[in-house]
View 1 (cartoon, helix red, strand yellow):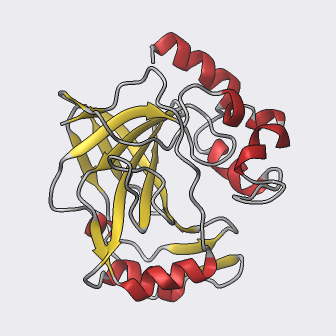
View 2 (tube, rainbow, N blue to C red):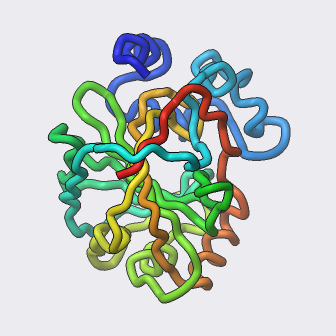
View 3 (tube, helix red, strand yellow):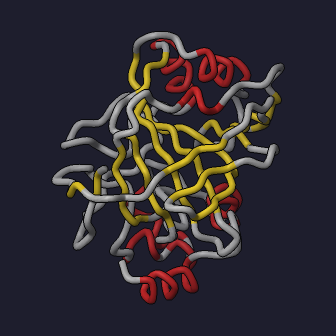
Length: 248
């Protein structure tokens, strides 16, 4: 978890801002199951090697967290009529309006947000129906992801709008009206923080993870609409190894 080690890993596995994210969509073919599934990611490309040999991989089970000062997280997201992309792995909202977040005084720009089912992270061994990831980057290529657990319950008009516009096949569509991404934030700001990786190839260990403990509610029918496109797009839990999971 030291900065020298992280700089080394970034030099090997990372790339300029968000190039790793783009590679997850445009590089060698990979899937969650089958011959190119999660157990095979590390052999599909030399750029994916961290998926097999990395020691700070994500997602993890958020258990035995240590209470600590994990830095203030200030979100400054802005409403936008997002381009909604079906990239073959998830439904993703591409951010065009400049906005972002600060973590411990460090500024990050919001690049995109997307969804997984079931949740990739677990809380004391339990996963929820879905998880949202808001992906940020700083000018040096370090990534910071804000995550929210999602469970069926009251309707969520922003997620409903995304699923109504989401292409059923690979492609893109634009929302007819702006939505406010801050609507995905839970009321409680109780949060976990740890150092980890992208949960998709190339699995670069360059991510500062910040996961809210309280789930948000979305309509069951919108979860079903997502699952009709992606029945399962969550990476299995990875070993925490010697990492500390912190909690405010």
